[in-house]
Every structure is written in C-alpha cells, then in structure tokens.
Length: 188
Image (cartoon, rainbow, N blue to C red; front, side):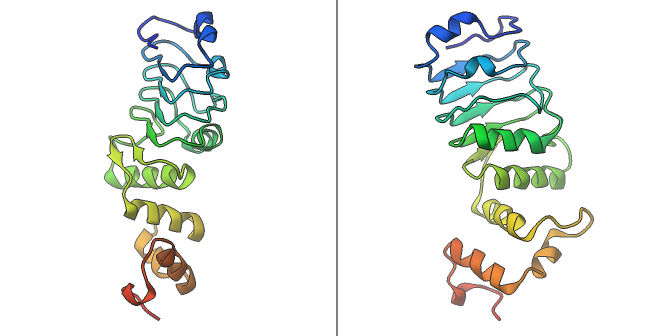
C-alpha cells in the first residue's frame, strides 16, 4: 500500500480496515510524526517512512514481523534512544536505513560513520544491512567485542583497547564465531 506524497500529517483512518493483513506500507514524503496508527499492523514486513517528521523520541508500536525499515530524511538526532526503541519494537528487523538524519553520520568522516555502524549493529543484532551496506562478519565481531569489553574513550584507538582485553574474552569471542584456538593469531 502506498500513501506516499499525499501531504499527510496523520495516517488515514482507512488504514485500519486493512491493518491486520497489511504487509508493505510506503508512507514517505508526508508530514507524519506519530506511528501509533500502525499498532494493528502486526503483519507488516516492509515500512518506508522517508522524508517525514519523525524524531528520535517517536514511539514505534510492536511490529513483530517487520524486516525492512527505511527512515531516511527524518529528524532523528539522538541515536541511542531510537535504536533501543527499535530493538524492542521490531525484534526481526534485518534492514535499516537512516540516511540524512542527524544521528547517521554517513556524510561525515569514515571513522564517525564506522562508530555509528558498530553502535547500531551492537544494539540491533538481527540486522543484516545498515543504510547502504551489508553488515560484515568483521563488523559483527567488533560490535560484539564492543558490547562485552565496553567502549574505549573517544580519543583512544579501538585496536589498542582490544589489545588490552582479557585473553579469555578474546578466546571466547574467537570460539563463538568458529575460530579454533590453534588458528588464532595471538596465542597465550
């Protein structure tokens, strides 16, 4: 269903008549800022909300089947509360795009964008694609290590931080992704 480019500030009431069977919705290029009208859309798999007025404090209803979410060009400025909310509301989310939001530094430095990717990957572990790129095994491992070891201070180099991680932690992480102890580069 497409309700794109209709200059809407609220979702149309007619959406409720098909809410329980709706699988795909494109509501891009409107003036929407509230998602509560989607509460009954539990079968939704694809949701496109580009170019609206959604902010990081918007409430996403529980959408247990949502796999693809595009929220490009909205007003999402604070990443943490937004991605934590998505993790709870969309437990099967595999593809997320947040380009052209203040919270997504895609057009900033590469290191800032990489940090953003790791933060999102660590929080929403079901993701396979973020913005324009598939999530790599290396990114997933770095995100897992980030969760277990913790964030280094901003000025500290991430590789130096990982060198100081306990050997048992690194061994555990190696085993969890299928690297046998004898195949690891750093051995005790």
